Length: 295
Image 1 (cartoon, rainbow, N blue to C red):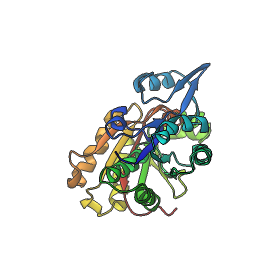
Image 2 (cartoon, rainbow, N blue to C red):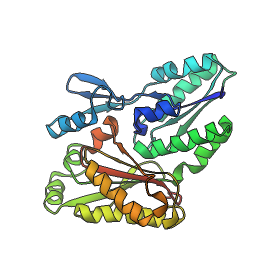
Image 3 (cartoon, helix red, strand yellow):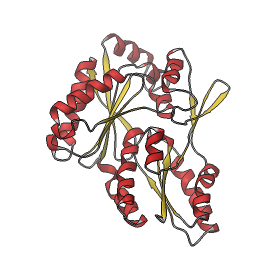
Image 4 (cartoon, helix red, strand yellow):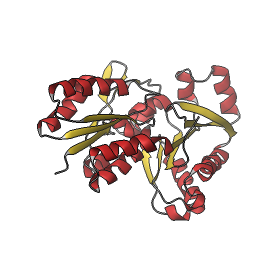
């Protein structure tokens, strides 16, 4: 039995089966629509299709993070079995959940001083955060120690690239990230913003590109520019989307043509209900290991 447990939050946006198969317990974020509360339970209670349809019909989800009590409830049973804990959180650049996890870790460390509890700020989100978990699970399964996996995550998390584009500006307008006039003009001109995560784990607008076809080509250009080994990249790669699977498939097709080592290896996932509450439908995200994010 491995002496440590690797855990994360539901915002790592991989299928429920992935976490089960890789033995990665997760804590669920929350969201509210109107007066009704939901768990971000990877589409089990409300399917992703229904969730994004609700947003298209005017629903405005409000999200909330995992609190320290929920982390304690997740970790303590494993600690009582004599297991150490290595947890990775959603980026502190977009959420306060890293602080909640640290509060829980300190409380449990006082109760169980013989146990080791490490918390990593992923400085990432969605399936990029999920890819980081996959690399760490590989190392755990190879027999690496908790210290080795923890140090690898701290040393390598900024090499995980996160690139996003959106073809629907409605949720950006609702969330106050763009003005009404910008939304009207952007929609009229078919402008698709291209964003990425910076070295502080914040989502930063980088370019405004006209038409979906051009932004698909540009997001792949960013991978060609930044991926380790360029077009010979053979590491892990994932795409996720919010109710626009065909767009995600187009991105995958372009990547496979440019990066022959990845053909048949790129996973496509759904953006979960928490991240999707802020992006709305029409967002595609691309994740890969590249050069170090420095701005």
